[in-house]
Image (tube, rainbow, N blue to C red; front, top):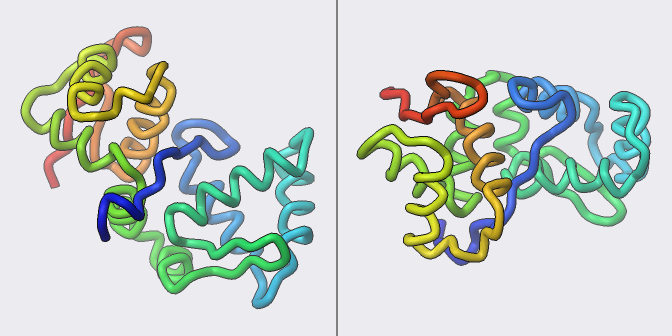
Length: 169
């Protein structure tokens, strides 16, 4: 898949870091064939006690951008990758989606594979690679959390100033 088709953003899911895959699996499990998008939004708002449907929709867009759901204004359905992930719980499916569909994830792993580093150093390296539209470290942090979820990187050291390193597969 080309760079042009990669999404420029990725957001967390309810439940926080360490629970993204569980949350995604819960949402995928709720999807019925030809399900109205509004029905799924209601389930998400109620289950995660969200204050708005707009927030719930943004979570669906994350899973859509990863290619595990196809979301339109009216309908939502699992993709083949979404069904495969639901059946196997294979994190590699999500890792491949991150690399192929979300800009900056593959690049962050490439930089970290040369040398572990703190988020500030990685942020500067990513800016040098052309990710200079990121005004804060939030977009990088979200990518790092997702990469931790799939076991591709790990956080080492204190929680306040950790170093990130690649987990060799």
